Structures are given as C-alpha cells and as structure tokens.
Image (cartoon, rainbow, N blue to C red; front, side, top):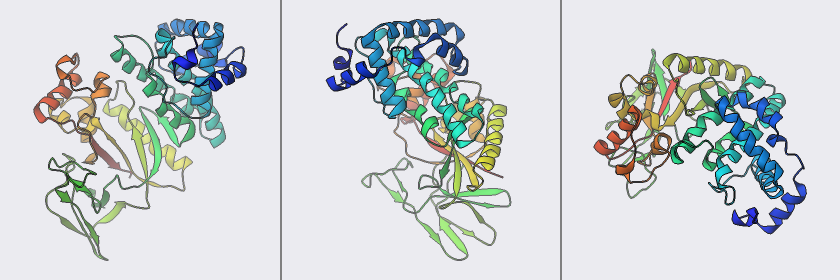
Length: 383
C-alpha cells in the first residue's frame, strides 16, 4: 500500500511517530468494543457488522492501523479535527473510520461524568448524536453509511465543555452575551429589547457590516426606565419604533451578568411537543442541581428551524409547534441557513436539489419566494 500519510497531507514525522506508537491492537477497532458501545449510538443494529469488518481490515494493515491511530491521537487526545472528507487510499472506509473515531470518544464522555460527578447516563446519551449524524453522509453519498469529517468537531463539546445530552436536545450552561436581547417581564408577559449598537440591514437582519447597516439600535437605562427597540416575538424582527418600560412594573429577567441554558437541536425526528417539554423540564432540574451557583434565567437557542416562514408553510409540523412555544429574536443569518442540514449541500444549483420531504419542499419554497433563508433566535423564561 502506498504511503497513506503523505497522500492525506500528514508529514513523514507524523507517519514515523504513528507507526512506532500505534499499539498492536487498537481498543476501538476490536469487535468487543464495537459490540459494547454500538447500542448507545442509535445506529441501526444491522450496520454493526459492516463497521466491525472495516475495523478488522484496518487492524490487520499496519499502515492503515497507524493512520487510524494518528487520527485518534489528533482528534480524541489533542482535540484537533479538520481531516480530509475522503481519506486517500481508504476511500470506501472513510465514513466508517469517522464512525469509529466518534465511538472512541464515548469512554472520554464517561470519564468526564465520573470526574465531574454527574450521572453517567447523560454522558452515554451523547453517543446518540452519532446515529443522527449518519444522515448527512447518506445525503451526500447516495445512501452510503458513514460520518462526514465535518460532523466530528461538535462531539468534542461533550468531552471538553459543560455540554450534556438531556432528552431530545444538547444543553450547555452559558453566560448571557451580546448575542441575546435583554429580556424584561411583567405580569407573565415578556419583552425583548435589542442591545445597544445592534445593526440591521434593509431586510431587517442583523449585520456586522457597517456598509450594509440602515439602522442601529440603542438601549438607554435610567433609574426608573429602560428605553430600547423591541423585538416582535412572532417574526424575530426588530420593531421600527422604540418603547420605554417603567421599571416599577417591569423587571429585568435576563441580561448581562446572568446565566442561561443554551441548547442545540441534533438531527433526527420525534421532536413532538411532549418530547421537547420533557427535555426542557429535565434540563431545568439538572442544571439547578449540578450548577446551583449559576441560576439560569432562560432556555434559548438559535437555528434555521425557527425561520418564521415554516410556521406558515408547515403549520402542523413539530418545527412550527416548537417555534410557537417561545419568543423569537434576530440573529445573524447567512441566507443559506438550513440547506446543509436538510439537503447535505448548500451550493446555489437549486434546480438539481431533490425534494422528497415536506421540509425539503418548504425550504426551497422559502428560498424561491423570499430569496433568503433565515436563522432566528428562540427563548423561553425559566419559571
């Protein structure tokens, strides 16, 4: 076999180090390891044999085994990714190699749970993301089974950061930052005010380019009032006129100095209102117990899911139902938000996009009719 290291952009020194350092039997290539951890990954049971056979071939080839050990050392130990999407010389095995790398992370998740003294079940639940990520490989490679290299980095969050899989979502404790509007409450109502200095373009989207900005918000506080630009909770756009809130009646719910719970939405279905509510309820209980010194004020996220167009195009969908349970706010959009997650691609050759699902049809309809795919923020107060 030709030099796999050189063909994939690694140096001769890296090859020598891997060849001399790789164990004769790599733990995550063994049938026993794969069998033990496969049930945690939400991957189909019938796919295990193919991944196990791939692992055996890698184990039996010294050059391939060394390359896999080098990838493991870079990714799992040094927290580096950026690997080739398809590994030269191991083209057919690439997607399965990346599955094996993600499975090799699971013991690190378990070790973190033990070290930080939270239930190991939450560490193991993170492995569920492996199965939900195979859809992107299948989208790009005509139904083949594997993981894309670009799906690897996010999984390091469960090893290195306060990130937890709780129910349907991935949650993490985050300090309030410039990304969020300030949020006020009064009598069960909430009002979100744009932070001082937010810039908006002529679409009403946030922009970091002063040349595109047509409006800049301000937030002015006095001892008795706060004046700012409110956010429409249905559209996620800033309103055109400022409002003044009387602080005798309105209390700041979340702002600078406060803690929040941020969540990510993994791929996969089953996101019913009941499942979502159960995840939020469990997350509130979890963070209150394990982070008592950081009382969170809101649960929030930002995602292409919450493009308000989908409430119109897919009114009975789980996406629309979840969107309606919270308040929307403006964030930065690329104009292509959601394309990769729905189609596995984000080029501009829209005539060649295949539409099989109602969601795919809705995304392209939005792109066609509105010329822009939005991402918005979403939040609910923690009561």
